[in-house]
Image (cartoon, rainbow, N blue to C red; front, side, top):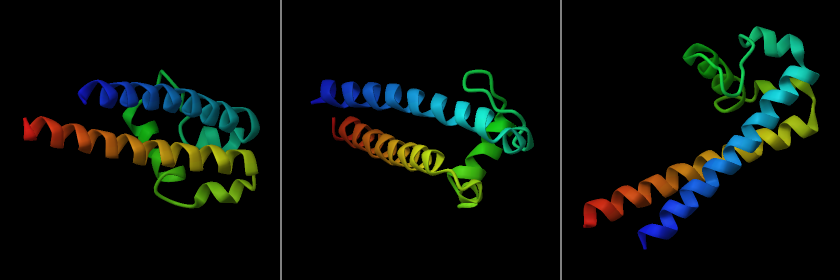
Length: 100
């Protein structure tokens, strides 16, 4: 049972990396003013402050909709879904470990 959970976590993480890279790249290329205002977040070279600013911008608020970018909107929806799945998989893992 645990192998499918680890496989699902790994696959979800990989998909999250791809979507996160596309999201940051689109923000940098298409909305550079916003990207600069968020502290110029980079996908793999990012500070905690920049991560927090980015999360507040598109995970915990609807401010990203002001960009009026339907592709960015879809990427944000995808990353939100990926995060929910990741949390659910982690919760399942914790339950399975606790259950022994």
